[in-house]
Image (tube, rainbow, N blue to C red; front, side, top):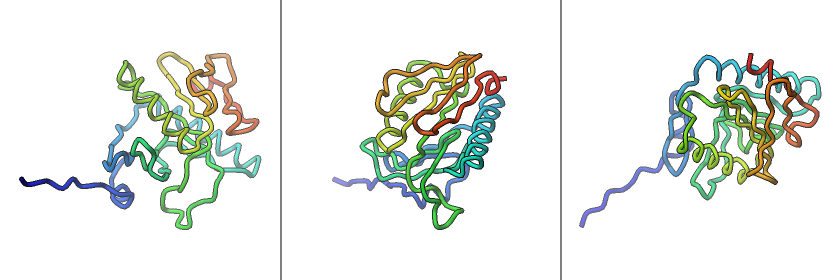
Length: 186
């Protein structure tokens, strides 16, 4: 009986992958580009986090497509590429490479295909991976429902929901930082 050896992708393979992708279970998983509204929201969050970093002298804010590598999780995940993030660890030695470690705060912004039961399951699994890797807070930004759901590692099943008129925060991951939901979704 013949056997076929399964190719296991590595972080080096991920570095050579064009476009946005993550390494999960030894496979390169390509992520779709986002549309107009999710792109603007990502930029606004990243810009606000970067402003916070400059003012406080702590951490770094990032918009879409920055890679974070982690030790292999039980799910097989080795990397994240959040839509926006805040990281307060050491930068990589080679600053052209991915960041080693999970962000303290990660943002996932829904695109038009991120709705329905299967999408909800995928989003919940990814949040679980973030928390296992050490992320403290994950936002699920829903442009259609016009809300931001904040999930915390210590209570991952009970989101705090911010709507228009609210100031959303990311406590305890980004102390004192807030963003006006109306500004994010305008």
